[in-house]
Length: 98
Image (cartoon, rainbow, N blue to C red; front, top):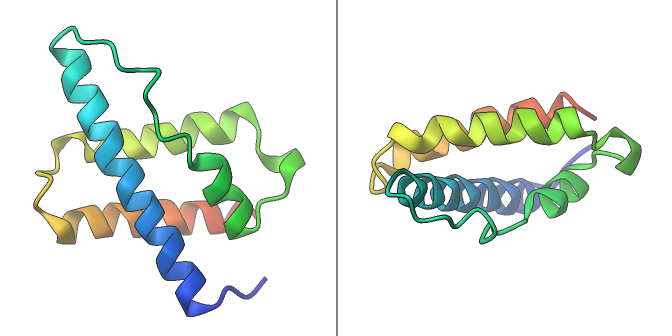
């Protein structure tokens, strides 16, 4: 499946937003503030737009996606280059799921 450049860029930006959101939620959870119900819940949108068919969106895929997002926990939120690197890593992982 070919993804137009703009769509690819938009997907990567959504993944970056999800990385930052996960980082915020994880940090607040470390302070005993439970925000686990305040996820952006954009992973299904990301999976759909990258072309992962519904039957392939397994619990294992979601688990691996969230594990990859959590790698952003140690990245400073202003370090856009490292956030982009992680987003690209996640993007490539998702492309391999098609």
